[in-house]
Image (tube, rainbow, N blue to C red; front, side, top):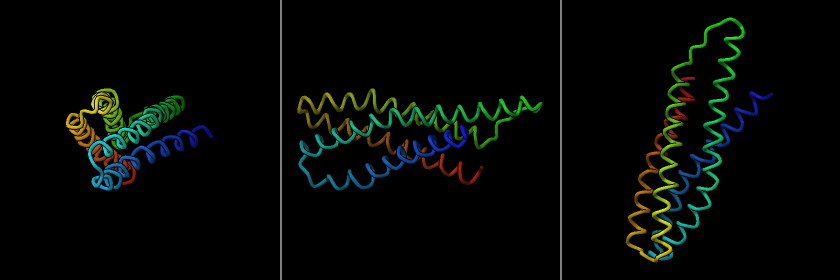
Length: 156
């Protein structure tokens, strides 16, 4: 039962995290282009602030549940007298997941902080530059996330 709960929490976390990036990047951002910069930037700040709070929890759940599932499998193999060798697909998923987690940390704790300061000061040009940096790194994380899903489905 614990294995199924770990897998469920892992998958749901990844689905919401990656799905949220798809929504923000391809649907929300283009729809807001019609708004004037102050309104657009304030709205993006509010949306991203809420999303990043959730992703902070979900990304941690995804990484920790992934590590826990690997550990449980390794322990079971060793306890049964075998030798655990992590499959290449698991290694790739783990590396990509940790990279995504680190990139999200940079987005949340450096770039979003810069964006928040600019929005609070009504420095719309600086806020636009900060948001462009967030968009770039969210795009990188989205590509890594989709790659990770591809590895999970095609190589497992």
